[in-house]
Structures are given as structure tokens and as C-alpha cells.
Length: 178
Image (cartoon, rainbow, N blue to C red; front, side, top):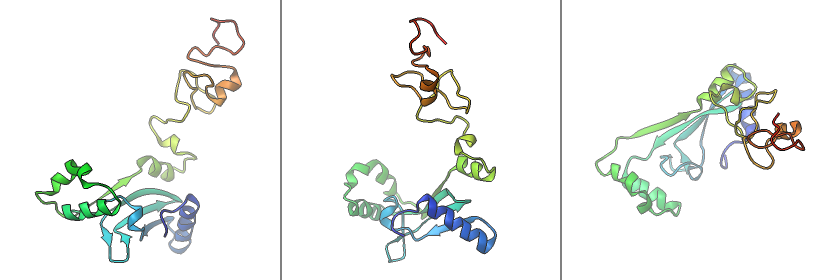
């Protein structure tokens, strides 16, 4: 493993897991320590991180691992990445009184929901989906929103001849709205 898995590799691993075990889920271990956050604890002496990714139906839904819990280890990890530990003093200060061994993880709830419900796009599992065209009071047939302002607007708005907040039809007399 060089850095991280690309989407094709994630899908292939889940397909393999489904063929071997009947479940399209797999935990991936052995990421290089340098590819993980500075606070990740090492796994052994071979340069691997004590972390994991959980892939489900071809998509990473969870990532986590053991964390460093000694100030001197954290400072060493920061220096190994050419980061000045003084820049993290407020974070490092809580380790002065002692910190038990611990870990953490993050789950992509929307990604998990998308996979469990077999939705075609993760935006269908998000309460307030966003896209690069932002939102306005005009919906396109596929549910996306037009950009509220700007010289170009979204492709759907351009196709319809709308622009700006008032969605003035391009070429129409000023003041006429669609």
C-alpha cells in the first residue's frame, strides 16, 4: 500500500470480499504511517500505521485507529513531518497531565446510508445536499438548484436562459422575470 486506495481498488476489494465471504465489506490495514495524521500510533516497527479503513459495497465508510497518547511521541511525530510542535501547544498541553491509550474513528453516516439503501448518489442520503452550483429558489428537473447569482450560473440555468437572483431571461427586456 503506497498511500490510499483509489475508488476502483475499493470496489475490487469489496467484490473480492463478497466472493470469498459473502459480505461486501472489508477492513483495510497496513497504511503507511506517513500517509496518516500525525497523531496516529504506529503498528509495529515496519512503518505501518495503527489505523484502518472499513470499506462497504465499494465505498470507504469508516476510518479510524489508535492514537498517540504521550506528549513526547506527538512532538516527535510532528518534527518527523517538519512541523513545529510549538504551533500545536494548545493541543499538546492536555497531554501534560497524562492521557490514557485511546483511539478514534469517523463514520460517514451519509455514505453508510447511501450504501445500505442502495441509493445512486450520496446526495440522496444527505438532509441538506450541496453542490458547486449552490441553491436558489429555482429547482431543475433533477432536483439540483440554480446558482443564485453570478455571471454564468449553473448549466441548467444557462440552458433555460436564466441568470442572476431574479432569473432574468437572457435577452429579455430589463425588469421582466421568468
